[in-house]
Image (cartoon, rainbow, N blue to C red; front, top):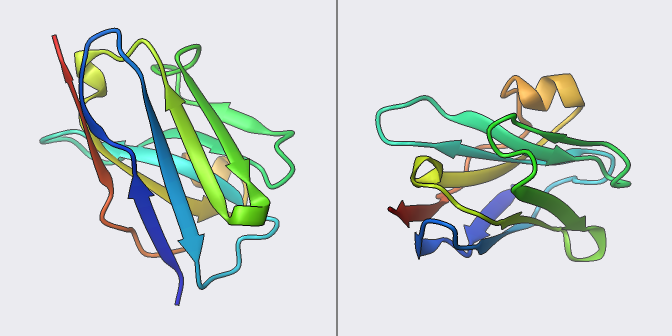
Length: 124
């Protein structure tokens, strides 16, 4: 059974940075995109970023492009999200998951059950 464990969240002031990690185990992640999503209080979960197995295809939500960077280490089955210039509107619980294609993962179609997520809080 696949397990996704997100970590690295915390409380940061606006303009600050955080690096999230997603450790994946127990499933098949080869040839799948890895993506990050977030759910802000009172809102639906939304797509943030995704990266292909090879890293040659990367997708970002418009709201984070230029501030966030997604990467992955396939040997460690781990994905990362470097978040710079954080804004209060980035406050949310962040989740990771796998998807079969760019369009699929951007629409929220994911392969595994959601993990617990990691809380990111940005103060103004």
